[in-house]
Image 1 (tube, rainbow, N blue to C red):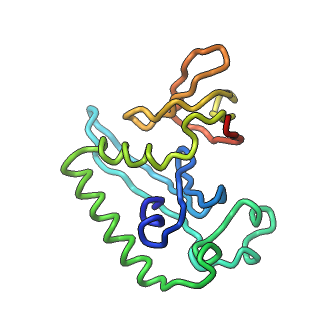
Image 2 (cartoon, one colour; image 1 turned 30 degrees about the vertical axis):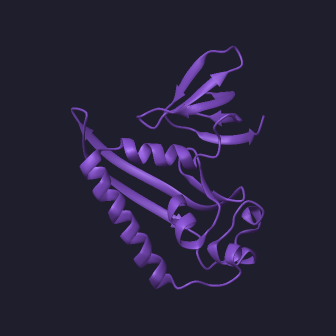
Length: 167
């Protein structure tokens, strides 16, 4: 979605690990996935997207008006939902074919290029703890690699980035 927004609408979109798409540090899209593997083979992935397209910021709930945005807000005009869906599905299909033919690695490189946090200090909340450190990279399995203050390195499989800053 971040790459699509860049190409189709010339928006400076990026990814906040693991699943938020931001424009100018404001959330424009959330992505959820659910998948199944068997013997290290991917059986399926279900992808869900929630994107703010033709939404006026004033129409968003008060608590997210400062942290959210929409395509309409960024472009200053409404866009055709039909064209948006058509172009996005064409782009998604191209990526799906690439994934089927070449596995995840080319897509992982594209994801990492769009990642907004490499070299940034972050605070991340996982199910069991809250960690702080500097983002190093994304591992091939999608894990976030974080260098902690004691110079140890941790791989984070899932969590929520609750604070970040450029250092």
